[in-house]
Image 1 (cartoon, protein in one colour):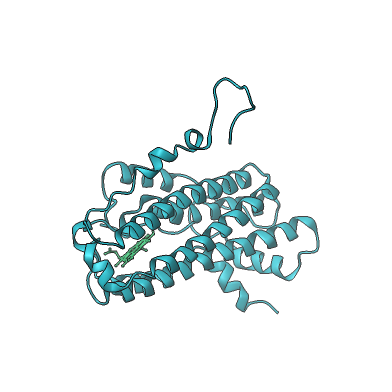
Image 2 (cartoon, rainbow, N blue to C red):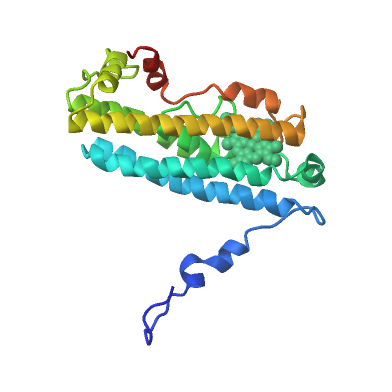
Length: 264
Ligand code: HEM
C-alpha cells in the first residue's frame, strides 16, 4: 500500500494502518502464562469487529430513517457476516483448557466482557434492552454512551417507521408495539410479489439472521464459559454460567419469530 513511485509523502502499510501502535497494545499481566496472549488478542479483535458492526447497523438504521430502505439491506448483510465471524472466534478461544485459563485469570479480575460497552450498544441499537440494571455501566463515560444510544431510534424502530411510510403498517406515536404489527408482518411473509414487499421480506429475514446469530453467540459463549470456569463466579462479579444461561433466550425481534406460527 504505497503512493505512486516518486510520490512525496508516502503512505505505506504500516503508517496507514498504524500497525506499530496496534501491536503495542497486547500486554499480558502474568509472566509465563502461555495462553494470555490468545485471550487478549481474541478480546481485542472482538472490540474491533464490534466497532465495524455498530457502524454497519447505524448505516442500515439511518438509510431506513431516510426512506432509502433498499440501501439498508447490503449493510445488514455485512452485519450478519460479521456476526458469523464473531461466532467462529469462540472456537479459537476454546482451544484453551481450563488450567491454561486459571494460570492468568485471577490478576485480570474484575475485567470481564460483561463490561464491554460496545456489546451493550449493539444490543440497544439492534432493539434489545441493553445491560442489566445495576451492572458495570451505571456511571461515567460508559453510562453516557449508553444513555445516548437509548435516546436514538433503534434499527427495529426504523424498520417499523419505514413500513408505515409505505402504508404497510398503521402509524402510531409513542413507545410499545404498533397496533396490527403481527398481522402486517405476517401479510408480507404471505405475499411479497411486488418490489416493496419483497424488499421488506428480505429485510425481515436479515433481521432474523442477526437475531439468531446473536442468540447462537450467547449460547456458545455460555458453553465456553462452562468448560473454562465450571461453576465459579464470573470475573465481572455475576454468578457466572448460571447468569449467562438466563441471557440465552433474549431476542431482539420477538414478532419476527412469533409470526412463523401464524403462516399457512
Ligand atoms: C475464557 C473466556 C471467557 C469466559 C470464561 C467468559 C465468561 C463470562 C462470564 C462468566 C460472564 C458473566 C459476567 C461475569 O463476568 O461475571 C461473561 C459475560 C460476558 N462476556 Fe465473556 N467470557 C469469556 C470470553 C469472552 C469473549 C472473548 C467475549 C467477547 C467480547 C466475551 C464477552 C462477554 C459479554 C458481552 C458478556 C456479557 C453477556 C451478557 O450480560 O449478556 N466473553 N463472560
